View 1: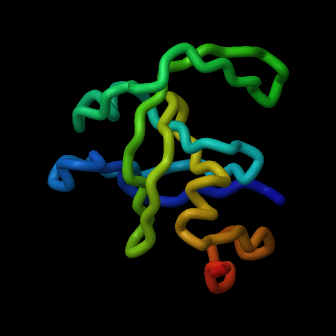
View 2: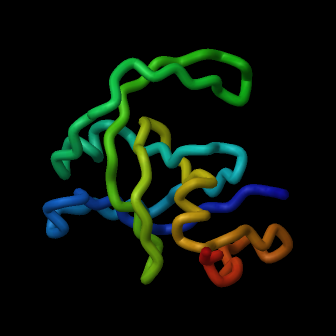
Length: 117
């Protein structure tokens, strides 16, 4: 697929005026979660509400992290996701924003209408 970066922001779920710009996030559809360094989350007051979760990294290594919830925004598109400590835009955030990867052009594109019951 190749890799590419996108520019976005991470915001506090309740205090919407608190956000931080993220000039470079690696798009990784293989990662379930979106990961953002803890110091950026601290800057906007995101509390880590889920404690001691174990994740398996791509190289097989197991890591334990505490995660919090934040708004992930890419231009006009946004969703809520759990945040970790790398700089990675994961599959859950992409799905929440109804975006998918155009690997040939290395960009995000509209997916399709959201399914409804």
